Every structure is written in C-alpha cells, then in structure tokens.
Length: 303
Image (cartoon, rainbow, N blue to C red; front, side, top):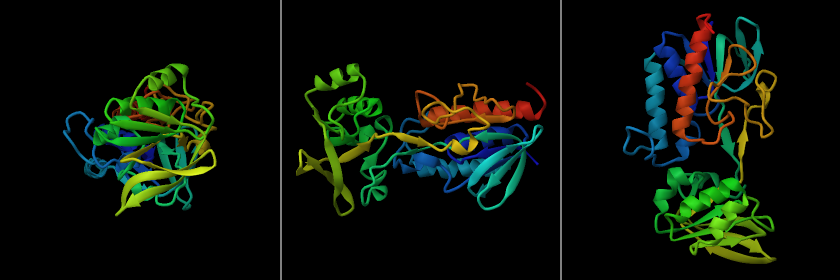
C-alpha cells in the first residue's frame, strides 16, 4: 500500500512524487511512455527559475534521478482506471497490474493535436514547436508559420510577431475564429500575413531541417517558406478514464482550481490536465507541489 500513487510522469507528476517522498510518504509514479511529458520536445528551456538554460530532456532526467534518490518508485505501465474503495484506491493498468494507494494524484497532462503530416513528429523540437513563450526566442529575426486560427493560435502569433521578421498565419477555415481584439491586433502588424482557407499538405525539409510548408489555397498548390512552424490547433486531455471520479469541463479538462481537489476524497489532479489559463512548466510543478501536500495531509487523516 503506497501513501501516494501518481498517474503521469511529467513535470507535475514527478514534482508530486518529490514532495510526497520529502514528506516521508511512500510514492509510486506510473508513466505509460517516457518521463518528462511534453517538455522533452523542447531543445532549450530558458524560462525556468534558477536555470539559465537546459533541454527538456535534461530537466526530465535530473528530476527522475531526484525522485528516485528520495525513494520514490516508478512503473512503466498504462493506467486504464482507478477504483475508489473509500479508505484506499486501486489503480488498474492495461498490463493487468493493480496498485493500492491511500491517495492518487492524476497528472496525465495533454497531447498537442498534430497536423498529421509525414515527418511531423520527427521535427518536433527541431523546427516544429507548440509554445511561443518557450521557443519563440529561437526564431528572432526569422520567418515562422502558425497553423491555426483560434485564440491560442492568435496569441502565439502576437508573441511571435514581437520577435520574428515575419509571421504567416495558416487557417483552414474561411476566417480566423479567435477573439475580435486579437484579430485586430494582428491585422495592424505589418510583419503578419494571414492566409485563410488553407490546407497544409506537406512539410518542406532539407537535410532534416524544416524549410517551409506546402499548402493548397483556392485550389492551387503553393509553397510558404519558413524557419519554424508553430502548431496551435488544440490540445487533447486524456482524462476520460477518470470522469466518474473527477468532474470534467466541456473541453475535457478536470474541473478543478489551484487547490487541485476533486469530488472524490483522496484523489487530486495536477498539471496541464486540469482547467487553467496558463500551461507552463512552472505552473505544472506548482500544481504537483500543491496536490502532493494535499495528498499527504489526507493520508495522515487530516482535512
């Protein structure tokens, strides 16, 4: 019986395990693929306090070493559900394992929705990005494309237009769907070009480097040359298996605030999987700390 079981090995999940272990609790982290989550796609992280520069993989490796040194255990399995047994929980995996814990912290994160193009996944972090705050500085003075036309895409484009020589927005619908204020800001910027009713058909590469995208617009094939492509066509939370234990909002995120609580006593949520406005590594680790400390109190019989 573990004091705290953490589902997910991203920044939020590993931080939760770290805080639980530092509080003298037995902790288990169950991760289905690789530790670190989305941050491992970032070749350089320069906005994490106390660290001038590191790669996402460096952060993941160091944090994993840290939680293991504190006594946390890890399992590489896919969690398919959690059973609420009142005074304890049972975490069930696809591989057939059943892990018992007094509390569970769900930190399943999100997946970025991809364009589905050949070679796309290989270029993530090497020309394809999802976060202007994280990676925008790498494209200062260069040309970038932004795929998408909703609020997230337009916010990314505004940030990038402050740094880049040119920003080309590629929207597959007849118009941008983001807020009018965001559209107005972008249309006033001389270095922003907006192309609508565009279908991105393929990536243009040279020796493994992104050089542009091929599109179809008004029935004609075109090439848009760029140094980077920011994909902002949505995020996919993976919370469906836990919807009976923790309420979801209309977008599929856990409907929980900064306290990281759920409707089920003993089950907490942390990181990008919960409803929030800002999804950054700093906010993920903050959630991990909050959720872990709440779980430790619960395991001790405190409210």
